[in-house]
Every structure is written in structure tokens, then in C-alpha cells.
Amino acid sequence: MVQHSVCVYCGSRPGDDPAYTKDAEALGRGLAETGLRLVYGAGDVGLMGSVARAAQEAGGDTFGVIPAHLVAWEVGKTDLTSYIVTETMHERKKVMFMNCDAVTVLPGGAGSLDELFEVLTWRQLGLHEKPVILVNTKGYWDPFMSLLRHVVDRGFADATLLDYVTVVADADAALSALRRALS
Image (cartoon, rainbow, N blue to C red; front, side, top):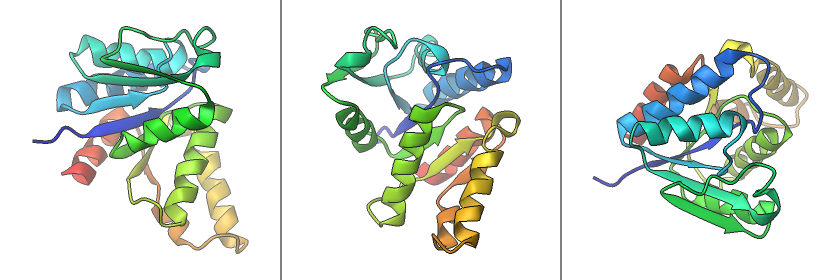
């Protein structure tokens, strides 16, 4: 069986609620236990570090991609199964996306939003059909989904934009959605 890979976008900070870290750890552990390779931004801080350490502790395959200018800031996690240093953020995002079969997004900041909007835009333009799953820990992504509905309601996107995102309550639900999507 071909191993599937899941790109996880998430914060380089832990956020203000321990539930975010709990879901990051549960997702990392669950990916490993399900035999899914983690593809992520190669940082060892915030939710990024939590998801990767949990995947590693569960024996999972980890694939990290980090631009050279962030190695010190995000504490590049060099003990991953695969660790790639790129020259730019654009290259990082390209390598991560090209090496995954699905995208899962945990809570995060501007970087996570940038990554999420990019994959949604590519989907809208017909450049891929990979599943995009938002882990809506404690309603974190509710404002984002309201924004997408506003964009559709105001005529700036077709209603199909909303179909490109699967919103789930927690890491366990994300793992279930991934199993369905990748089977």
C-alpha cells in the first residue's frame, strides 16, 4: 500500500488555550498510528513542534520543510525522518503541498491563514482536488468560515468555495475525515 501524506498547517505559537496543543498532539499521534506521513513546516515550537513530537513519539514518518531564514526562529527540527531547508517561503509551501495528499489546518496565525488561502485559491482554480480539513478546536475557525460565507454572499466566489473545506470539531474527527478522504 502506498503511504499517504498529510500536510498540517498550524501555529508556531501554542495559542492561549491548552486545547490547541492537545489537538495538535492528538493529530500527530493519530497520523502516525494510522500510517500517514506528517508533512509540516519543520519547526520545533508552538503547535508545529507539538504535532511533530507526537508523531515521532508514536513512531510516525515526519517530513519537515523550512526556509533558511526561519531555521533559528522556528527552531528547525532536524531529527525528522526528512528535513528540507528551502531558500524561500514560496519554495517551502510548494514542497509541502507537492508532498501531500491532503491538508489539515490546526489553529494558527497569519502564516497558517496564508497557507490555507493559497490551497483554497488553487482548489477554486481547479489546480488540485486534495481535501482541506479545518480542525475547529473550540470554534477557532468559526470567524474564518463566516468570512468565506460573506465572500460567497457578496458575489466574490461561487458557493462551491464552501465545499472545498471540511470543518471538524477536533483531531479525532479530522483523522476520521482523512481516513474517508484517502481510502
